[in-house]
Image (cartoon, rainbow, N blue to C red; front, side):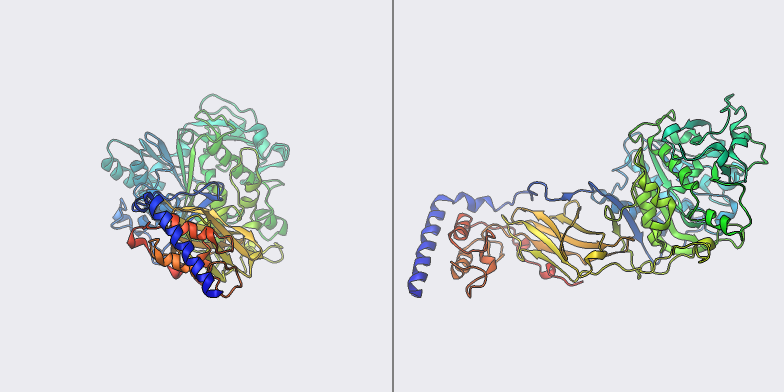
Length: 639
């Protein structure tokens, strides 16, 4: 009976093969040149859609800046240059030769906003370093910018020649050199404290609206806002605001001229907000004087407090308000970020964003420790550049680079909850970190916070993260084990710590094309990335990244898989009699049978039958490029 069954199978094979040879010879020549790989339908794959991407470029050997004598800091003398470039390429991987092409268009005016603070900030690494700006100017010009302006309004204004001059930032030297390099492009710098300005009244769109009155708010100089002459006298343009109202700001006009705004902050701790990064750096777009201040008042006359004048530093109430309980400064930051994103060229706000935005954080050397008066903050070598188009997401990821818990920082969390004219989200389930892994090996020792964030008698929270490593993947594999045309290809990640995973990201490319990022779908202890139906002969390179709720991340090694053409059961790149033989041996079997062979189940219905034979016969003679005809066992990799 067994012999009879085998004879019947052979007869079936022969007849099917004969009909295939006669009726389907067109298929033999069709597969010599493989068609472009195709993803069928919506299989949850997205090219940076529906998520935020934050890049982290890290090099432990780059923890210093070139000397000012190396100006204008070209790539041959500036190791920071390549680090900035890498961070941008991570965000725009399909255009490594022109990494800002996804943001800057031909003829754009681009404003670069560093964080210069004041003279003392340079010695303590409290200011953005000019070598970080050089590659941004180069890439902006390369992308088509017609004007590039480096603009800053320092917190403590000095004559233009000091903060921008050779003794400190040497931005003047950079501008002069690059204007000669790019004569057809306007390269300039602007002291925003000396810029023309526009009064912007956010009204009901301000985060202060309905929360505080002018009588409840105080400037950093301990002056009640409704008594501040900054808002009560005629300005240099003849306009009198006639009193402060929450949401009113004098904004430097250079900001409104920008088609693209590139925020270039320094990574630092801060005595009020815990961290000062992308979001807080925009305080520098306000002007220090409108022509009416007495100079007995502090510059940057914006709200800082919501009670009477701050008390001595030993007072617990002050310490709490100086730190995480401060409910005012984050609102100022939110309003200013709204203005940059949503205000048009005349300073009028719109429901939709009016300019393109990018954050590039200088974390080559950051600043940690106490940052108010004495003792001063101290430099912290970090060797990183962090970049992204969502300032809230960037600051959340930067918090992890610093070893901090972003969920206890008002300046990050509250900003992410704004629904009208939103600034961004700090949601770890929707933010994908690309580039360096954020774990105990790369960024393991947290920054030293300001003392108010460390005092257990003041704060009930712990700003320093206790766990600096992500959940581990126990097994990564593909399904089916030998991917093939006509069957959905999936990447599966098994982990015992699924509850700790905020998101699993599958990063892949087809035949060396542009990388795609897909959020994997959880199913029990498994994360699934469904690549869908892929054309036979496609080579897929991929790796997986698991990310927890504090942006600890870790990536697997890259793997490559080859999608066999339909009917190529043994994945040798050709459909031939050997494939027929494999199906014949497993014919009429199901899982659990002695003769069962999963690779013979070509259509994935858990049966080996005439349907599978037909697929082989129907594609008999097809073949693909032999250089691609392989199966990489790295698709079953342990991490």
